[in-house]
Length: 239
Image (cartoon, rainbow, N blue to C red; front, side):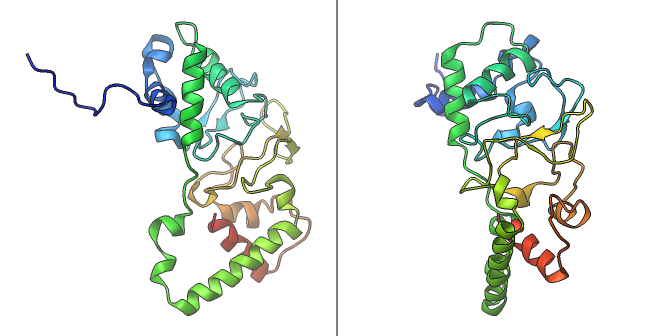
């Protein structure tokens, strides 16, 4: 008899490798009906709304967040109810996925290592190589516009909530978008990779970044000119 290995090395080499296998393992859920991958496709997101018990706000479906680049952006969950990634993973397995067996520390730590290994997605333009296909004059004009947009991002106070290199914060804020139970305080998601998102806000009510800036005027302290709107959008689309 001969054993044929179909999936490469059968033994996980690192903690993150083991966590990746667990991420796709439906045996961690009740009756094997879902895995973490079911909602967070390849560590990213399905883009849908999901309602679960783990954040203690059942009845308020929230947009499924991408986990790419998300591993060091504590706290976790839209309401910031999980102070550590391990806490969020443990609650997701035990409460959301209703694991039939006790969740082990090793499983949680392995999955946390995997999530922390996921890099943020590139901007949409970067992924498509769009800027590389443009003239040098166009790239120069676009770079200037994005720089002005980044300046506006700070001037308008966007960076108060979406701060630092990870473009997020440890706090929760009232963003004037209450959920179905009247909760108003939410932890701002990182904007890294925001250009690749088709739905935004916790309820997915914005269908594009342009929607956030032009339609919802999200947390805008003043009206923006057409040029300012364009510059801010160009900066956000570069993320």
